[in-house]
Image (cartoon, rainbow, N blue to C red; front, side, top):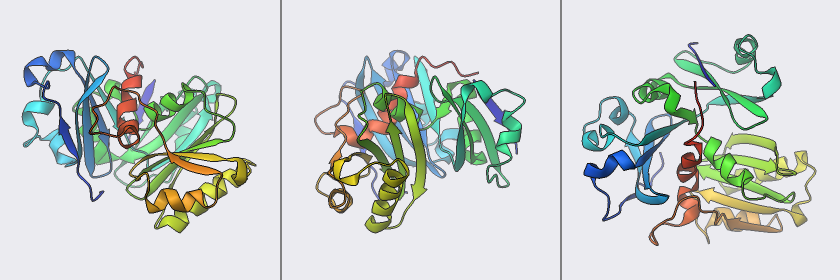
Length: 277
């Protein structure tokens, strides 16, 4: 279900496998992850990542120039993840077509934003507002191919037996998403903008406190823009039992790419069978 209501990072990695060919795209899946002003893409073939590129101007989606051949090709499936500026989760039983517009009024929707509602998992619907420019770009590929950008990431974690003393963090562009599962069900999900490692630690500790988790017994699993021996991970490790990069792998990856770096976009492939209407 998808309802539509009107209302950069410094790095730029690019990878194309030698087997990638625009003549074979009808067998590929194109994954697009949209930010406020940029987007990244990944392409998979039979469960293998064969292309990945970051931080392209959003205009390239609606009026492609540099990526014209790649974005205008015919794919087996296209899955596009939209960002949320603000959001709320509601139980699926309460997410009726009549209620969702009333719930959307509690979001901080600014001029130019658009509000969407979509099933996040078997129990929850997410209602969120996204930049109108991002939604307009997504419409080029059909809104039925669009999901909330972190739906795949949450699905990947849920499918891999998260422990009751585990917190999962995904970091991109000074924004951290944090989720918690117990027992096997999503119990907490939120996102925070932060500046500096100390603020990152603060939000992780705040979430742990809200969930009554003892930091001395809690392990953090990090994905996204984080280095295995970097300052973010080391700073978090000083306050928790352990902080480590997330080794979960959704697609088969080339040795040049570490799993945690592409986990969020690669996990969009898990939304391939989702019915969005």
